Amino acid sequence: MNEPRVAVVGSGPSGLYTVAALLAPGQPLRVDVIDRLPTPYGLVRYGVAPDHATMKTVTRVLAKPFAQDKVRFVGNVEIGRDLTHDELAPCYDAVVYASGTERDRGLDIPGASLPGVVGAGDFVRWYNGHPDAAGTDFPLDAEQVVVVGAGNVALDVARVLARTADELRDTDVPARVLAALACSAVRDVHILIRRGPADVKFTPAELFQLSELADADVIVHDGGGGIDDPALAQDKRVRLNLKTLRALAGAPDRGRPRRIHLRFFSAPTEILGADRVEGVAVRRAGREPHDARFVLPAGLVVTAVGFRGAPPDGLPFSEAAGTVPNKGGRVVAGRAVVPGLYVAGWLKRGPSGIIGTNRPDGAETAAAVLADLAGRAVPARPDIVELLATRSRPTSDWAGWLRLEEYEGALGAADGRGRVKVHDLESMLRHCAVSV
Amino acid sequence: MPYVIAQPCVDVMDRSCIEECPVDCIYEGGRKLYINPYECIDCGACEPACPVEAISQDRAVPDGQEEFAADNLRFFADPLPGRAEPLGHPGGSAALGPVGLDTELIASYRLGR
Image (cartoon, rainbow over all chains, first blue to last red):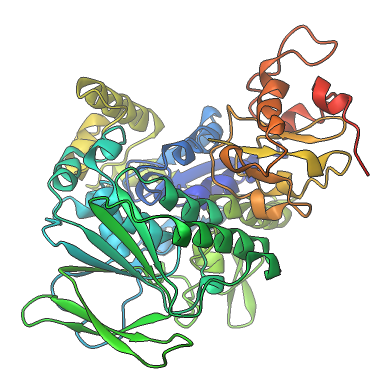
């Protein structure tokens, strides 16, 4: 009897928690994890900030399924580019898309397309050494930087910009990024937050980290309304954030070389500049005084106002929600469930939550897959690796990733650092021992 | 700088945090849950999940509960009462199951009411 074959497209947390849940009951099953890069872990490797090294050790858990022979990693394959969905589907009894959302939501204000305005996704991919950013450089020659957004990504960007090169030396950022950060001219990072202190979506631990920066002061601009009493907040997350904000607001200005400004009730209305960004016009939406406007000079504007899903090849997609319509992970077209097709992670629920959110999310999708496969006789299927071998695009496997990982470790050791990422695709494939 | 579980969990053990932990590093003792500092990735997912607000970062434990930070480590670093070996890094609480034992501090802890 043939074992059912499941493809999981995307090897970030949502994909790999789905794989772990697929394997947990011990049913006969073969799983291929397909990624457009030769490296696994998605946003753990390329999204989580480099100074969150402990959080990146979640990879120890995410890697576990690959210890089993029935799980394969098929890297350097992008569905829609190297293989269409219609070519992929016949190879499997179930296909789970967990490929996330990679496009930045833009700012819809005048001047947003000026040079010097960048999406947080692009900026994060740059400092995290994503191969898509291998040709991008951010010179960091501006003293004043504006970051727009009230989530963890805005905090990550601001924190990385406020860190000293010494603080980031023992991280995995590529050498060229470390060099750019070492000669950074940045002095002030202004985080523009549309609403008030009780409304921010920061994870409390991430906000608290601002109080631990070695060389930066944090200045809280509460918009004139003060910071709400933490004791009155119902939600624990809000209460913790308010506590941290009050402590930050009460801390003395220590005259450090860099400053992070948390500007509440501040909405950008226009990006100013002739040939490139020179400043941001901001409307104060605070309680008092009403409708004040001011201009912040800025040489770099990073917009962290969320991500949008790109429709995966051959799947229904809701532009409004930025997700693939689904019921508990089963993809829905019109009103009907599409047999054998599933989603997990950001494609399923939208770009929100933290790494851990993907564990129950992936478990739900895996349960749907297993329930639909239960008791079904499955036909013999073509093998995707054999199919791809007939194409010009080379694929990489788990052993190849382990070779690249070992090389990155050696590269770091040679420089007195932990690990240093290889960031261009050709070198990555070479170190995976894939012939290109 | 891991998260730790302090006094409010004693004899409560709601277990909501166990569902949230992405690395399955929250272990069940007899009277209390313990976060394994060797395995915790410092992500903070458990903190808002706790209905009795027993969880915080080890450097932000509420006043008067500081001893619980070191005690979380002891649960894994020292042999538990009646055992020869420490728990160490079991690699996941679901596979290990409830431990059913506590550190000396917790086993003999008297809740003041």
